[in-house]
Image (tube, rainbow, N blue to C red; front, side):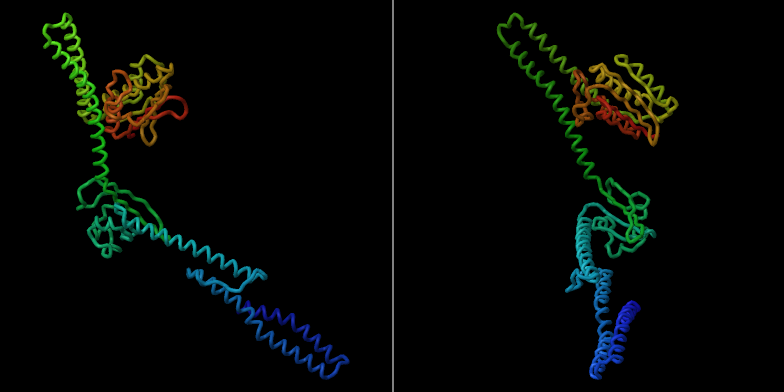
Length: 427
């Protein structure tokens, strides 16, 4: 109202001097009385029209602006200003508000579609999802979470975690009475309308573990079958040849030589099978590590002294202590250092060993060999590219690392040619 009043006062301030000038000219000059009254009536009519029409002319675009802004605030994007043109500032403002409404309507539609998609995914995904507020009250649960709770969503929403028996979820433990299986529980925090919520995702990984276990068995059976066929095929062939040889009448002159050669081949293959089964038994019977404090620097220097074929450089904290089974850890280091030395031997390179402790104890064995051609089968039992190799060195080493709560990886170097074996152990 004040803005409208200021506009009227401004218009009157511009109109009144002109009106006074016209009246003075009409009533003081030599004009007829009729012209005088005509001028007076015109000025009076203009004054009345100015007072009656000017407020409506000013008020209409302002009310249109107010209605558009109110509609935008209330998220109603259907209202538009009509019959406006870019010929005055008010028209420009109305057109810009129309464009803003179009953009906000499009964004709202996209948000609604994304929310609908998210709700559909949450409803259909086979992972239980919960959201708790700062008071540990359930604010969101999907269909899988509802099945896991065994409580209808309408009853569960708004209830405290302890009331519906899921208080342990907030402490990253599975709650009592959950179905048997292995569970992966993850927590994260997000904000909704300024309120902090805790998101809990509970996934049943039993099926995935069973599939991985089945795939591991298939790989082992495939390797065992391959090794058995490699040994049994020549034994079967030579046995048939020997049977045909000894049943001939008369026996050939060199039958004893052929018989002895065949028996040697059979003996060689049975010894290979014996070594194979012994290596498999070694994998299956890895004992639990007997941990005690071990000076890692002394152990690395002792292992490095066993390898004399290539130069070995050492760099690490000589006072670093780890909790480990010294014999098993030594066997692990012997395996990866030997592999690095054999790779560097082909290129006349060196081996570099370094170790340090940050969040975890990390030991790196870097070689200057040709690098790894493929890493898919590195840790497959009995897979080897070396002549006379057993294919269990890396597998056994990784088992030792994992038994200590650590990891062992082997990959190509990014700073130079060669590969790097990375052993991590809990600090």
